[in-house]
Amino acid sequence: MEVLKISKREKLGTTESRRLRYENFTPAIIYGHGQENQAVSLSSYDIERAILRGEQLLKCDLDGEEQNLLIKDIQYDYMGQEIIHVDLTRVNLDEQVNVTVQIVLRGTPVGVENEDGVLRQQLSDLNVQCVVTNIPEELRVAVAEMHTGDMLRIADLELPEGVTTDDDPETVVASVSIVAEEVEAVAEEEEEVEAGPEVIGEKAEEESAEGEQAKPEK
Image 1 (cartoon, rainbow, N blue to C red):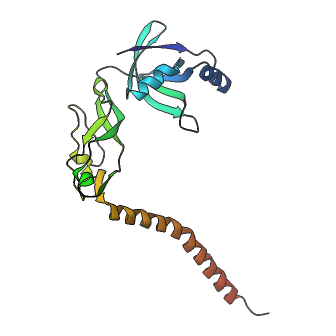
Image 2: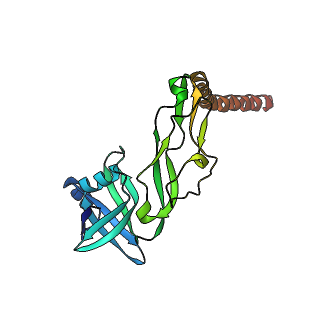
Image 3: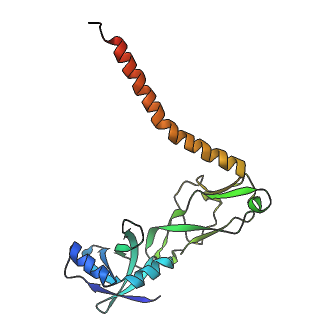
């Protein structure tokens, strides 16, 4: 595991954070294990590369002292592109942790290739529990054998050894349905969205009309 260099932050505040980001550093905070919170900064390139690789456990060098840190939260700018702050927590290598892992579908379903089906992924992340050194970068799920009408649920996932989840086993991860059903489902969703304001408007008009009728004649 690559050791990332991090530095203590003596100055805090919005102006200082902007200066750091301008110089290609990302503000961060380290907490946990009963120790004081420590404001730090690290190379924006290093943290972005680690996140792109799916890494959640980082080995960091803070003033010559190596620390094992887990990425707990990442804050992005309003465009969702630039990382503006990272929360890191101290961990032991034999510690059990709760993390979120991305679900990646692999392969093209039979139902898509030969049955005019459409693959939909309803769940993109899974909450798992495991030892910190056993955190999967991602969960790869083979979907090549799925036919139209098939649904893949959390209960069907093969998790790596030592990795468990408390998420509802009946939650649908992915499904394959025929194109007509997909079009109909989308149409129904659009109708529901459009019908909402109309119903409210009609109700308001009805109440207004009833109020007019209830007024005594002068």
